[in-house]
Image 1 (tube, one colour):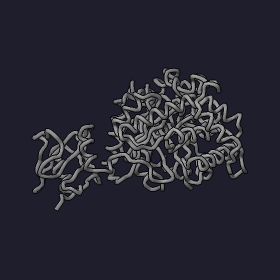
Image 2 (cartoon, helix red, strand yellow; image 1 turned 90 degrees about the vertical axis):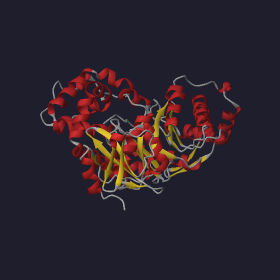
Image 3 (cartoon, helix red, strand yellow; image 1 turned 45 degrees about the vertical axis):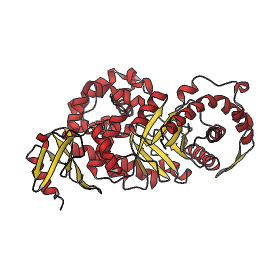
Image 4 (cartoon, one colour; image 1 turned 120 degrees about the vertical axis):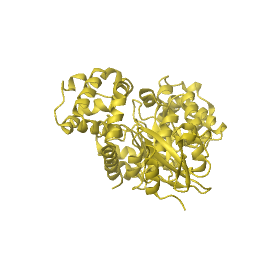
Length: 474
């Protein structure tokens, strides 16, 4: 008979450990695992005669009633062992038409994100960070996945879930994510496209044949048929073939390591809107090179500023999304991906309708903003200090983000009401992009406050994601 949660919690308390209620799981091959905290440190416990983890500390062995309980630190090595015995902790490929990514820049919000996502018919992508975010937060792909797995274990979530190595731009980043075991790889073509187009005469025979194959093809879109124009296809081939060869190389690297994964191509941060011809060329070229495209993130019309709603003509966005969805259905059946989905409430339901429910949406900054909101409510003095730091480092923070925020838009001091402060567009955008400098300068204070206000942080993250999901799926 397994220990009751009450008896286990009481036994752990004698050792200064706090059981995370709901985390106890019995494993099919015997034994049970649970999550606990010792102060601010994360611990895992094993109930059984012997521990599966190497070199257990005999000082952390206890007997609760007739059961042996082993306590171990939550480390990457222990996670790797545990996920072999508990598949729910391993990222998997997407198995649903709709998927939703929730990035967590602090590594403290996964359980709250799960509480929101598990109520909706979407595949959850819980470990989602880009190299840009990793550099600013001092993390790596391992630590992001380790934090997400902790939230999964602590919440009792049975999966499945995905892990997205977002906005990859070189092989080193790809290898690091592959070693950690990610299930989704997003290839960002910005750097490769910055090299400029290749002359038509220098294109491969394959690229030319794809143009010939697609020229004058009709795409049946809701607003009427659209014929692909040869001139636009030629321009797309010249612009995209060199960049797509980097995607091919990345796919081959994964294949050589025996990794079967979902692959996304991102062109959403390019200057120009993605044409249907460019979309079709990308999809068919990759098919001819043996790469199965899972998702494409086009550059849609309109403005996708951070921390604010969509700015542009919603009807124009709807028509573009419907046309791109038709291209996706015609040339491979991949899904469309909407990046910078945070706060884009005006277009989330439009995107769902235009894609027929086959989509991927990414958010990240919106979860970070909920942490800022909790800080503002709990300790206004720290909130004001963070604002001063962020304001002083605006140019550093905006370096990697296309954002129109100007210094003169920022008030010299914040109002006393934290909700009024965060209702200010400029203030909200500043905090959105300043996570790196704020965690560098005041990270321990931010984390300590969020740990002390865990329930408020959990509720803020859950309710905010639910608002996004309601808008998307209503």
